[in-house]
Image (cartoon, rainbow, N blue to C red; front, side, top):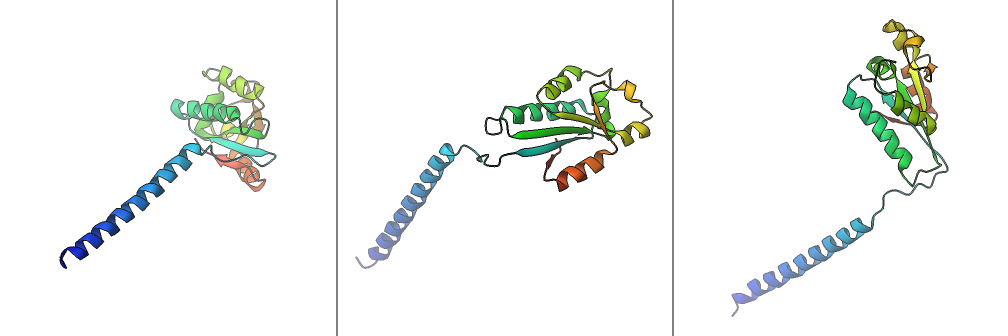
Length: 157
């Protein structure tokens, strides 16, 4: 009988520990299901989306991401957004492109849609080759630096 006592004690300890771990995991699952994401307690949020790629998937992702954040009920009426294109991203704004309606929709929702003038110069493009509703900044990187210093979140899709 003496030889069974350590086994019985070890088994009891193991079962107690397993029950405790299971209870903790169950409570974590319940808490996780109840989690609704971060609460938007600030009066205003600002984000600048960096578009420096001409890959259609990246351009479409940027537009989709902006539309998604604009539809987030926590941020309704609290968010300011800018889409800054430079380098390869300039192609999203070319008149012969396929993004005119999507970009106009962003502008209609209050998004600033801007283009880097340095990229136009480097690519030997004229403003007339881009959609007429595009805004311009001297440099895309300068825009990111300034916006970051002003507290804007930089997002690179």
